[in-house]
Amino acid sequence: MAGASEHEVLAGWAAAELETALAVPPDPTAAAFFDVDNTMMQGASIYWFARGLAARKYFTTGDLVRFAWGQLKFRLLATEHKGDMSEAKQAALAFITGWRVDDIHRLAEEIFDELMAERIWSGTRALAQLHLDAGQRVWLVTAAPVELGRVIASRLGLTGALGTVAEVQDEAYTGRLVGDLLHGPAKAEAITALAAEEGLDLARCTAYSDSANDLPMLSLVGHAVAVNPDSALRREARRRNWEVRDFRTGRKAAKVAVPATAGAGLVLGAVLATVAIRRKVRR
Image (tube, rainbow, N blue to C red; front, side, top):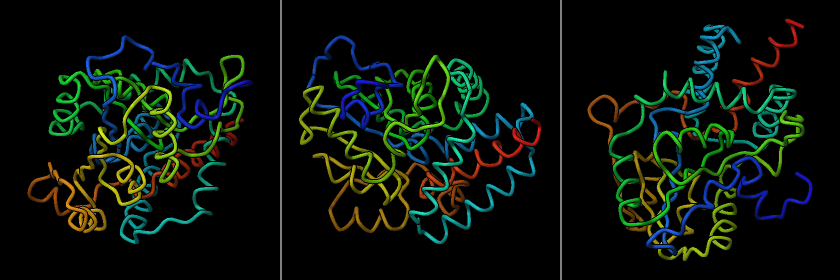
């Protein structure tokens, strides 16, 4: 990571290897940015990743159930605390220390195909395709590890992903983050940095999210769309006259996805803390 510029750190490029450095598209100054959890995918990507790890005996199904219940309560409280985010960060670091990058990438690919592909919202995927068909680039923007975001973007045929970046040395994780969790205002900062680098006109760009936590990102662009919105975002979308797309139907629309985007940082920490503890016990 030595020598990485500020915008590279913010945008997560150190681990993303600039998938964006492709041929300039027909519409080079417009782009779309999609949140992942409950926007592009039903539920939280890190939860499904944890499910895949549980199936591979990294931790137990009971641990997963307790984690999911905690996330449901967290969503209903509709709050997020700095202390939770700090604990999530430390737990994530404890988990990945010493893991090889290629192992995480391989697991992410396997688990996406097994558990995540069928949970992509077809309506949201169609919106992304409209931007691609118009010659625009499309990025996922997620608090999940950038490696997981990259796999999802690749599987969906999108341009790339911005996500939380862990420091890597000698192809293994050091246990330190580059920057901070890509959550809330940090998403807007990453997009701003990417726009400056790629020559994007943010007034011509579009952002999509389900959560009021992403208001900084949604407020940054010229066209904001609330997708499967939580109650707070739905109210704000009405106030600002933003477009609303809801691909949930019947009971799905009434239920809270478990776990949900509001606790993205805590999601990461709760899952990985459990794994970290069990890895230490085995040692």
